[in-house]
Image (cartoon, rainbow, N blue to C red; front, top):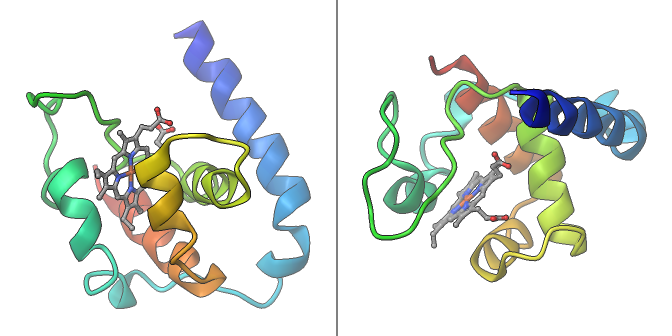
Length: 110
Ligand code: HEC
């Protein structure tokens, strides 16, 4: 719990720096997300999926996390600050608008 909180505040701090410029003009629209998250679903579960993913390798649940956290995580994969190879490959294919839409969408999930 404490670790999670620390990670969250780190992500917020990071998001504040990294997206201060972009955040002004880019507004995430969850309605545009479904077509963009088709490739995420195989690993991160179907929309609204709540339980821990009981699969071969652990994948974090992203539905219900804050939009800022999701955005910061995806940009960290893009820049190489986070190293996971599949997530990096995916993140570099997303535009800032894609990331904003996806973050807004997942943040609305419970
Ligand atoms: C090939 C499987 C796979 C696909 C496809 C995939 N992910 Fe991931 N994702 C992962 C794994 C595994 C991790 C954990 C990586 C790590 O340890 O850094 C992760 C981590 C994340 C995180 C960080 C979560 C956290 O709690 O820190 C976010 C956000 C995320 N993915 C979003 C997405 C989005 C959005 C898409 C679709 C555009 C997507 N992922 C597609 C496997 C996948």
